[in-house]
Image 1 (cartoon, rainbow, N blue to C red):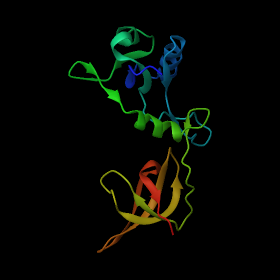
Image 2 (cartoon, rainbow, N blue to C red):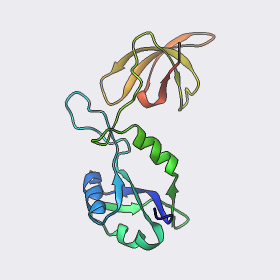
Image 3 (spheres, rainbow, N blue to C red):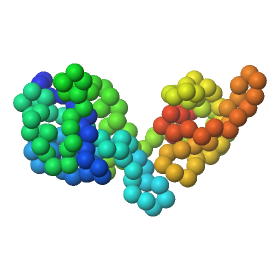
Image 4 (cartoon, rainbow, N blue to C red):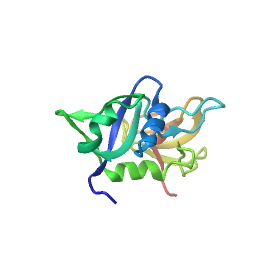
Length: 163
């Protein structure tokens, strides 16, 4: 395995994620555009619309990657491409099926106790009520010291609490 290879986030041209992935792969570059689970028969929306991930040698291949059809630019900081940890990409891959669709392995049922893992409601505990129309949205009944409220959050922000 070549240790000079790193993962990078790539901004694509509008709605050209698949084109960019295909073109990078034709150059022998590993690339992925993770998608969310299909919403009622529609196309699978991208997990990160307008972005893909690719693994390449940032020093040797950066110039070539910039000119791949479908690519707008490689995400950079201070003029240098910003590598992404293998652990982050590994987590994405661990949740993808063979078609590149992210599937949550934990099934939620009404009444399950959940915790919100990120965002402004991080660490709030509530009760899962139902999935909502739209990609990966759920409704939770939150219980706080002073009141209860129904909130809608991304399914990816919710984790089931072991009973």
